[in-house]
Image (cartoon, rainbow, N blue to C red):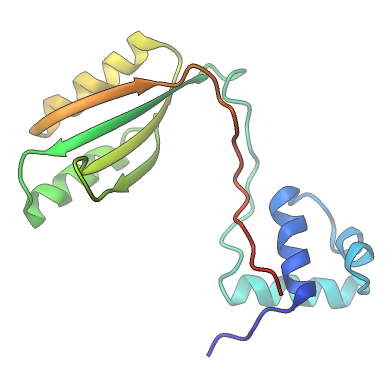
Length: 156
């Protein structure tokens, strides 16, 4: 059974997802816990699976991957074998930063980060060379209006 999160747990998760570089002492100060008590809570949240990993968020523009492309895909078929091959191919493409199976007219949605349109075209050609697709439609983001990795947390 999963333990119910309290207000302190939620605040710790919120602080960590906004800046994982904060120490247990810093977080403890903000939630009125000692460093050790805070550290124990963070470890428990990790053990319970609320915290999956701690990562650094990089500046895609500075690293030459500033163009965001959303790719809507309609599958050529709907078999387990095709899905396994498609999933394997897509997961090997480093430019694909998000990958979803959808409902509605689009079967799969990919989010890519690339340098420019020609870099996207190279990814597109690699994809269609390896997997048979019915339709591929791409939309290029003109401006990133909001970007966050923060998960909306429940209120307690």
